[in-house]
Amino acid sequence: MTTGRGPDNGMPDVPGAFDAEAGTYDALVGANPGYHKHLQLSAARMQLPDGGRGLRLLDVGCGTGASTAALLHAAPHAEIVAVDGSAGMLAQARAKDWPKSVTFVQGRAEDLAAAGVIGPFDGILAAYLVRNLAEPDSFLQSLRTLLRPGGVVAVHEYSVRDSPAAAAIWNAVCIAIIIPAGWFRSRDTALYRYLRRSVNQFDGAAGFRGRLQRNGFVDVRTATVPGWQHNIVHTFLARSPG
Ligand SMILES: C[S@@+](CC[C@H](N)C(=O)[O-])C[C@H]1O[C@@H](n2cnc3c(N)ncnc32)[C@H](O)[C@@H]1O
Image (cartoon, rainbow, N blue to C red; front, side, top):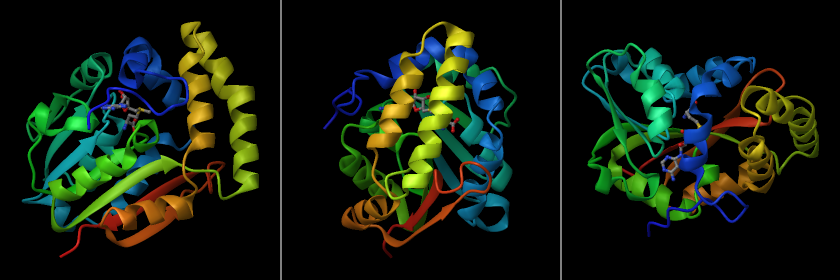
């Protein structure tokens, strides 16, 4: 079902909120040590063969293209379709240099078919997206049907519920750095306060692995990242059956 809403945590239109922050987003994430390296790590963990030659890949919630660039780095020869619901974020992405094999599409993650996103894909990356969705189960099911049998999905996402230490670090960094930095850049902290809250409310790593399994994925694994986001940012990897 398409709801057009974020999860029930006070941010009713997540892509709309990103529109307002699109112009400052790259500078903000660029100040986060490891942001781009961690996306590259998740894309590399998809183990796409032969530089992606002959493969079709999907980047859902591509934003300004940071995750798309990570996919391109892992699979420079693949065809990549990158989708986002925010026109502002997509405008930032499209303004960068891309090979012809990369296409940007505006569309909601809840209804990718309506945006003309048709499978099968050999691999799908969803970076910092799933936590924003009101109905993650139906989204995961839609990804499974977009994948070819045996295709790989990587969900790159914050998850702190399983670790009190990770949750404490996350909340401290939000209060001391992320929310004040958002204020300095855009004079509006709504999106960054939502970021803190949505991460606190999202599944624990074990819970999200279970969610992937319940929604028909197999070979479900998790790995975290190095640095201060250890046990805070994770790559959830899984395959469609077959
Ligand atoms: C935190 S940004 C991450 C962008 C990019 N994946 C990256 O790693 O830098 C989340 C993106 O998801 C998009 N998004 C959130 N909810 C969405 C939805 N329901 N449908 C489509 N895009 C959505 C936002 O517009 C935003 O660009």
